[in-house]
Image (cartoon, rainbow, N blue to C red; front, side):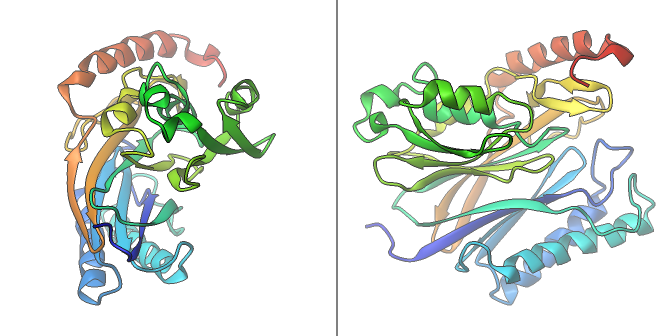
Length: 312
């Protein structure tokens, strides 16, 4: 039976210092954040939590009963990242400048179903709209998500909220062309996706630099496999000082972050009302090896442009 207890999943990211350069995070910084999350669990401020790394960013996943927008939860995240920054300053980590870390995040509140698979994605060296094409593929493209045709609820479509030069709601498939015209614009960011059948939130994006993304799976939303299929192509939505870059799917457990290429990790959880069961490393799957090879080839081509890099 589905729980009647509302839960909120809050996901934050911040860079508290790079090791060495802007490619990794020193273990001591991650330990500082883990300690803060553990203390929050012991004090019953959150039900559960997990700390991750993507490039030189630290990610925090928090499950709690507070409503969306809770200042206490955001303060908890700010404190955790500030602890990491303090360690970063002591260890002279890359980019540490004495200012508080730039924290970005998003959250989603819902009543937990009997089976509640939720996927959390983190990106490094990526712009605010980095997830736009993935969200379209997941929730709007039947060639990626066949259930948009075969599932009764999903065939009613999804509502996308995009902000940028033109902000607003778009009902797909009805508003498909208008949506694509907006979502493909520079500076545009898809922030929310809702089921038109139930009005439930299916996905939310933070919309900042190196954005985070939360996606719920299972009817009335796409399956886990359909969501992950959107990452089979390393779209050129990353960015670095050298210009555009493919967004390469990588393992959450990998240490290789030396080349300046946009990257994304995926963490899969089965949620209970008070527990994060997981994570499962989703994008480290060997099935994404071809995408990684394509990304490396694309990066070779794009980096050869040097100071003439396109859309720099």
